[in-house]
Length: 123
Image (tube, rainbow, N blue to C red; front, side):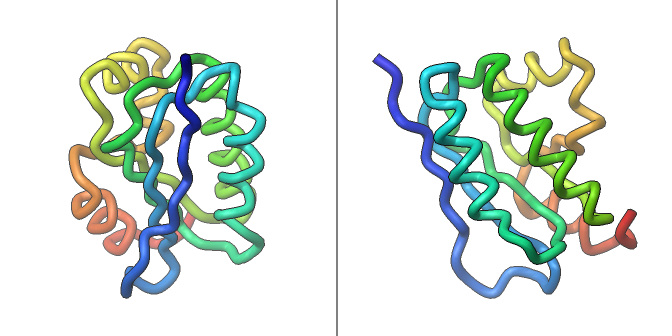
């Protein structure tokens, strides 16, 4: 049985213009639509760069990738960027096999993803 995927806004004093989110659980076709709603709601209307911590995301199928691509499109349409941080080995392989590692700026840690976001100007 699939567990619900959780979208959590990371509290604290994140860098200006960067939204930090954490995902947890298993992301597949059974919960992709709910995930899409929760993710887009968390992103909101304010144009910000987005860093998504995948540490607690234990599974992601093609439905989950479609949702992530959708939010990537939203963020980029606002002239901002998205980075995914700390994916498990299976997720790293999935991003590599699908050619999405560069598209999502996959990084080994949240700290590294934030460093990249703060060292570059928006798109």
